[in-house]
Image (cartoon, rainbow, N blue to C red; front, side):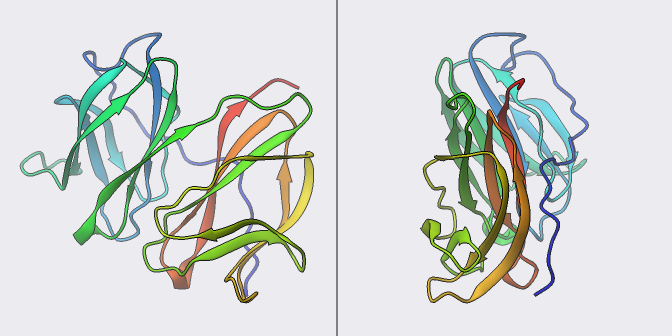
Length: 218
């Protein structure tokens, strides 16, 4: 198994943020992740206003402020606002943060919406795992040759957060029978940060995107 570099950053999208649903402050915070391995670049609209243009697979936005309440999220192939491939109502609450991921293969594209955490005990790091690979089996995530930190993560599932000491970890993604799926040796988790690790792509090309939910100054 080829060892993949564990990246603690993702490409930011070029945003076309309009008025309306998105506020300059207050309300909720939402980031958008393109996690569909065979979908083309997409445009994302909220309540009829374009907010993301030409988002490619594995791209994620920074957190965007969104007014609390119900909103309509629509996703179109980039530059083609004729028929949405997704049109879904999304409700966000005051003071909360969310990740909205476009997941599954294009023929069955859907939104996976999860609430994110902004808090971590001083001096600790906090992580969770999300399974967004449409054809990968149920997996565990743990230390190489050691105990599982997260068990039984299946497609569209997102685990609870756990807190651990900051540092370098030799992690792996494996099936419940112990067979390694992906080597994540040398994963560096910084103190006072909160991470979401999303398994993406198809099973034969599985990789991990690590998003920082809340980077605090050490």
